[in-house]
Length: 145
Image (cartoon, rainbow, N blue to C red; front, side, top):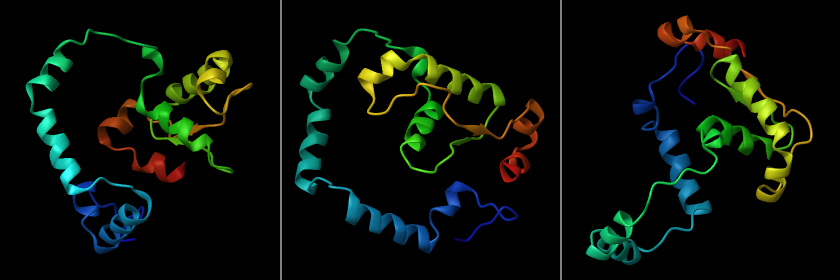
């Protein structure tokens, strides 16, 4: 890979590197069961239709479990599915403490909604970023983590 902890490329340039282009093309061909161009055009036309507009405007505001709707906790859930993986959250220590305790308290809810549930605090670590690291950059915390 073209980067290391000493030379971090910006994401806008990183994914245009040849090895990333090849990796993403292989992933798409091997694992993604994409639709045909005809089907995509048909769906695109439908999303521009009056029927689609009316369907979207008929929706009412609804929030279900707002405390569970953040991306890092979803990443922690996903990482728990891999054997031998310790989720690493690049953020404040308080966020990870919340995830660890929140996941252990919600056993009854998750038992019915997830294939795996937690009876004790889940394992996760953080880079323990502070306000200074958030402003100046938290690369040191991430490398040390």
